[in-house]
Image (cartoon, rainbow over all chains, first blue to last red; front, side, top):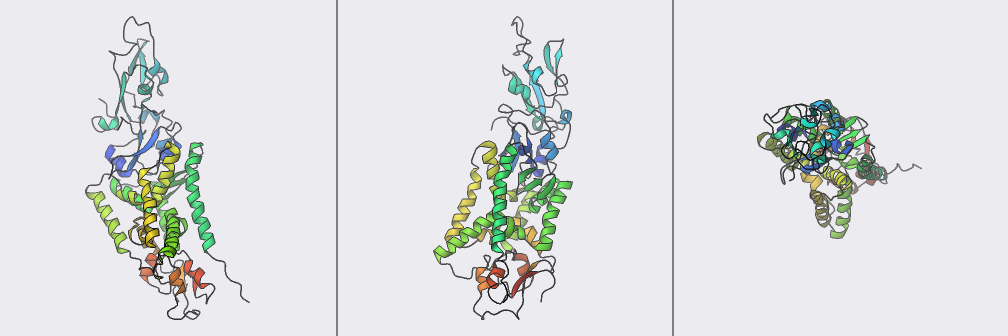
Length: 164
Length: 275
């Protein structure tokens, strides 16, 4: 299965799987059709919501977490989405390389939490901050594929605001 | 001259077909950004009012040790309906019930199945629910019994087809079951296996005075061996009997009332105690 994120407001992986009844309300209200209901396990898994950020990332419209009837997704603000954390590989980022003559800033410009989750260090170098919620937009738009989002379930403490 | 009471079946078929069609339309409307209706047969949202399959709610609550307001309201509505009117979901709403009835009717004609189907049995369903809940506590990562919801697969397959333009392979279990029911002329899924009907059936059996078919011996004009009402019951029940077994298994479809309406009209829907 390609890398995927859980929708905003996600609880721990175990809690999500226990609470989700596969109703698909989150996928139905998603403005960008980025939530897919797919099985977690071929035989025993429920059909839970996933966001394949390289196909279609989350733009944090927050409709899914507001409608989830079983509380598998918490109704939270954009800043508390807790989907994961983005990592930027500075060694490969064109903004950090010298003498390229390029000011890309695509990740900064497209970030739904522009100026909070991604800021411009020294006014021109994009940097992911502690406020990143891991929506996956930067990974999706990066023209040189140097951003990777680590889902909250793979972070210490299984997400819930945990940071590397 | 007495005029015949209206037949129930056309109303029931219209309701069943309307619900089946609604779940075709819901994902289409969702993709048109009309989201007042969303969800499927496991949990449905009607302009903010939740409606839920009580078994899916029970599993989510047992798995997470917590409930939300929407879960209580959604499951509560379904259980209250069953408490007052019996498991009418099975006979008036469930799209699988509609397809199963049609498959059985066609199959019974083709295979010349004995006129009295086998008696419905509640025990296997109860066993499946208990096993599913036990597995949930012991090892299962997710609500397993939701995978046995045929209306759930029906609506999820439609969601999948509209949202992702893909066929949902596990939903092929529905045509497979229907073919089996057509060939056997028996509604064995609804009779013996469907776990989703257990909680509503139990709720429906709680109140003896809830809406159900009641038999008046004085009006019955059938001879002993003539049992038109029982022949018409797709679940193989004898509508002339009362008791807990009837209350658990009868889904108030009204086919027996229809069969009796041209005879003595000994079977009628009513609230209250048995005659």
